[in-house]
Image 1 (cartoon, rainbow, N blue to C red):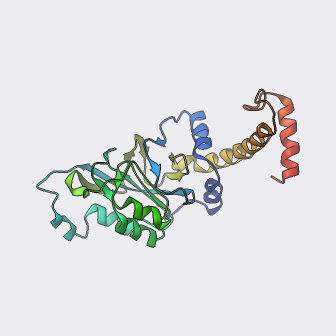
Image 2 (cartoon, one colour):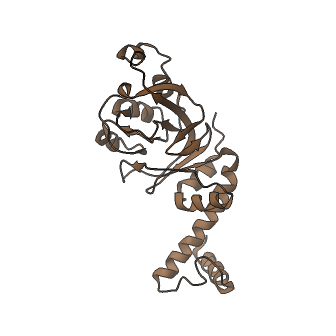
Image 3 (cartoon, rainbow, N blue to C red):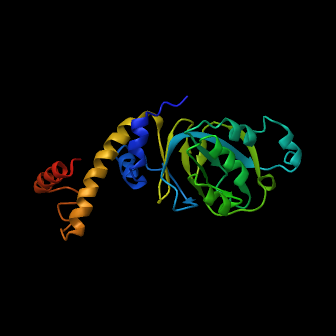
Length: 239
């Protein structure tokens, strides 16, 4: 059952992964950004949802045949059919994109279930098709071969690594045009509140810089006058 508050989800939809990375860094968390993944389509909206995970290990030939899909408890099939609406399906493919983590039909099933997005540190087959679906999707690069050739789906909704980032079930996943970041579940509310305020200040600083103002004393804010100017701007902007 989701514990992510709708108001928090809405805040996070408008906050960049860069800003969240700064907030995490202040708390000593430096490895929460999923390395090496990119969004398939620039037309999809940002991605926010709690992590539901799938873990792959290297395939073993005698265990990875087409017969495995007759088993309804097969972890890949189980994960696709159990990932909750509003969650993000996160796949640990060992940063190996030589074989596909999933394809268009499976991602289409996730979309039909109302899943908020999908990310793998490997690759997707049917990547052009997935890009057209409209669901936020992130991967390393396209990959046509079946996952059975190199990956063995071993477990669902357990702690994983994805692109060197630790991902625990229930952590909140945020994706934007830069990539994907993982927010520890117990910090989500305070991170969202802090990053929301930071975003407002960054919007002010951006407007000032584009108007010709120097960054000195503005960004970062080290000049008392900047605070005065920001409060006046915020009042005028209604933010």
